Image 1: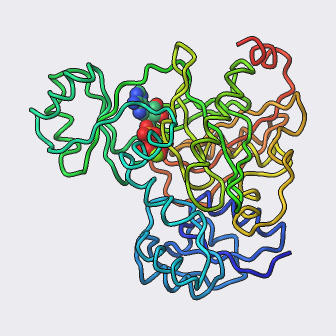
Image 2 (image 1 turned 180 degrees about the horizontal axis):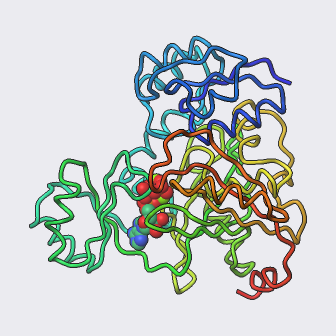
Image 3 (image 1 turned 180 degrees about the vertical axis):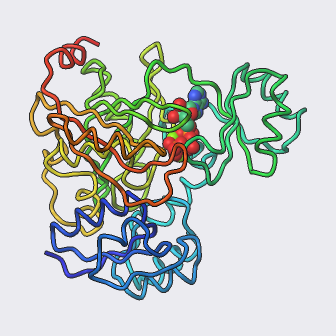
Length: 373
Ligand code: ATP
Ligand code: MG
Ligand code: MG
């Protein structure tokens, strides 16, 4: 199919599902992450690299083993990716420029705003002091969201500033991190759209889905989202515009707030496959993982590859989190139309994503809800 070797920075569940997709097309992958990480467990074709995706030396070692570098996590060292891209020793997709822009959420928000993409209004926090956060409260009103500019995930790095009285707790929680503040987005639903950005910058999107979070972790995904056709279209267009403003090829996850007045705002962009796109493995002709590989290798991708398999296909994805994951996974084996994915992680800490269950439904009631909302 293509003899170029793909090096993946990160070997978690997203990397594992990239490897699964690669195997089906005889594409070769090499993983950089800790020994026995989920993606490495299922690929014995190569000796993988043990080390951290934030360590430039380890990334250089990986680069020697492959032709195209990509990521399954955004918290990687981008300086070395910039050097590698400039030296043209390997291709880097998406571009280091995209990853660096996304890594700092305030820079990401400013970039999107200057590209004409609607986002929640943001202010950089110049000093981590109560006086400054009170100033922001006077400007934004309460509640507002205080966020770490870097290294956030699963809501770790976010703090809801409910009123002036919670500023000291917010500072206690986040004081050592670079911060910015976001105006509160009073959303009725959270949506997400996976966008494939081709080598020529052309974008193709999957249907908008609905994500439901519990304790800041995505718990459920409904595909397609239970919204009107107009909102569905608007969400896809917004996501394509946001991803179109970035650089390089690959799939991107656009997280979107649907406000009560029907307005849509981008929350954040992930420069990689995304939790909200797991459903594409069973529900679409081409999964987000295969689409990512085809995009970074410039392989053909039909425009309909990202549609749902049939107009009546509906999918519900449930993340299997924490210690109870195995019991739920076992039960899912008995469910009609359900597929179970486990990630090979050893320690089932509270809230940790250990696997997911996907149910395909052809349920008329669910379809009616989708069409009328
Ligand atoms: P992820 O695991 O998706 O990478 P994260 O740690 O980067 O998450 P965000 O996506 O910034 O965090 O926020 C997590 C959740 O917090 C959002 O999905 C949303 O539910 C809520 N949230 C974030 N920003 C706002 C906002 N401005 N107003 C209201 N709620 C918000
Ligand atoms: Mg995030
Ligand atoms: Mg998020």
